[in-house]
Image 1 (tube, helix red, strand yellow):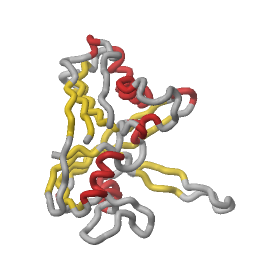
Image 2 (cartoon, helix red, strand yellow):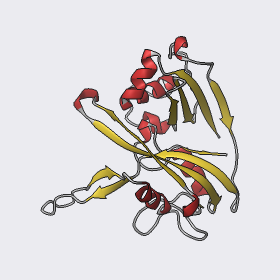
Image 3 (cartoon, helix red, strand yellow):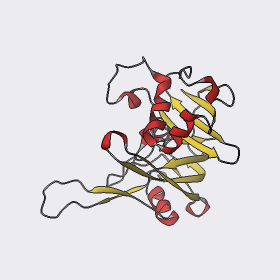
Image 4 (tube, helix red, strand yellow):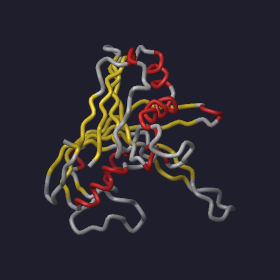
Length: 228
């Protein structure tokens, strides 16, 4: 069980406009709905509350739709009333999945690959860089699909999603990079939208991915999988 808050916002409002151009400000807007649930300053506050988000913008209509998923209900009273195009819609989601069930899905992800560290250094983690083409994004996602009988984690450590899909039927769209220079720590996040249908193979694993998110940059509105 989880909650979805659907926020319809006016992209011309200063707070919303600031969130659109700065990834950290968008994160602050999302987390403003969950003050008081955990201790201030907790580094894993977002994951404790299961907060994931995704957004889309219609520039012609100057409208931003922000969907926030969480284990606890959001309180959006800290966002100025003038920033809303209409009142927030908070939905309780309580559903189960069965093996063989087919569901439509949409997700915005930060699909990355790891570049090796310096060859002279020992145990140095590679740096991550984002995939920049639809074909590479498709390969990234297909590696995470899980056929019947496969374990939740592949031999190379890739965590699978408890479902499979027809790779040729996936819709991939590259999205603009979002960035932030907050506190002198520049952040650049490559994004891609993936749409299609999933066939459930491991319901428990799928529910875990729906609750916890997929891939990196989950604090910056990536990784939430929406199903219908």
